[in-house]
Length: 242
Image 1 (spheres, rainbow, N blue to C red):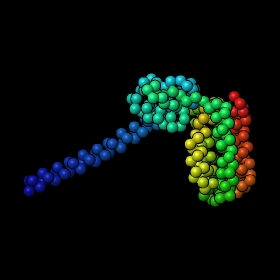
Image 2 (image 1 turned 120 degrees about the vertical axis):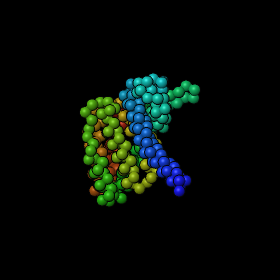
Image 3 (image 1 turned 90 degrees about the vertical axis):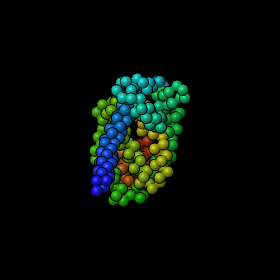
Image 4 (image 1 turned 135 degrees about the horizontal axis):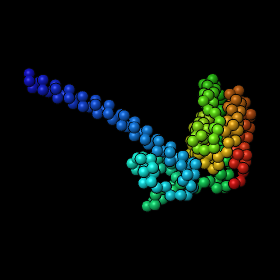
């Protein structure tokens, strides 16, 4: 009987330890994610605002000291930023801020978008249904034009830009179009080139026009509105050449 009670007590203690371990692990993992995300966003802000100039070396030790964290979340953040094309890693030399797109690269990016995004907008208009209309309306529900010219103010608009263009690609029914757009990370590169308050109200008005035409099923109108939006981004807000 004593042996049985002892065995039961050991099993109970083991189960309790496992429960406590699991419960303790979750907050730690959550805190680690939160720290990693914060370091990522703060490092991205330095790059987008040119506090770290294009081409400059990025000091992992320096960022870790500035953010009061270990080097691990800094390294993880830089790996994420490298995948977005905002940082570049050289073997044995570490990370540098990626250079800005030059005129030829920017032109290639917009030519690529002009090939696929008007088509995607037209297809989205042709396929639109009530569920798609709800998704489009929801995207505009909480976004407004920024009132300052810095990355922190423009970050919600940049995120909206990505979400809307990705949503239109999804509504077109072509998964490859969406994947191709995401790989370009165009929203980050364009906003990194030049801050300009006209990006806010001008971009949102054009987005709203495209969405409205998609929601009423106007295929040609949606295609033309997307072309106008892309061309105004290239030749209007960015000034064509720079």
